[in-house]
Image (cartoon, rainbow, N blue to C red; front, top):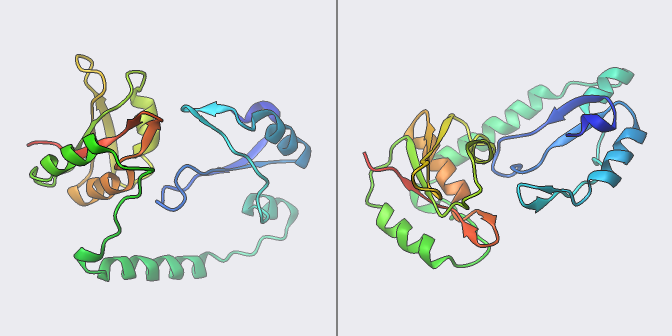
Length: 195
């Protein structure tokens, strides 16, 4: 998508909850980046306009090219390990609730009924727009670790099954994307699939 504006050195897209939906595209020169910014600003991508700004800091890829790269990988790994440990030590009752743009009665009602399903590695996703496809859902769900595949049900548009490696990973994805609005009228309703 962005290679039409110039040579792309690197694309950084993180799968963490905090950084989902964001990517850093690194061009070889500023002119290409400026052209991409002006042309692609507001471009509809999965029914949402792309918002583009310049990065606040120099990319590692650019720093390596101009010789100013200083690896800080060790401090970053220590920080991530400490955050991971803090999350694991947090009591089960203090988990943050998923944030949605507003109340979704149908999602709340079916989430309550889906709570009876035992946690497992397969998620049942409802209230999808008819135009959704496996690639679109794959982009959303692969940002969470352990993602395996998306299976659409052709006979019933608007539903899909998403598989992860284990129930803990599927639970994290469910919590992160519950109520996510693919379109202004379609907030996803995610439950554990019946076994």
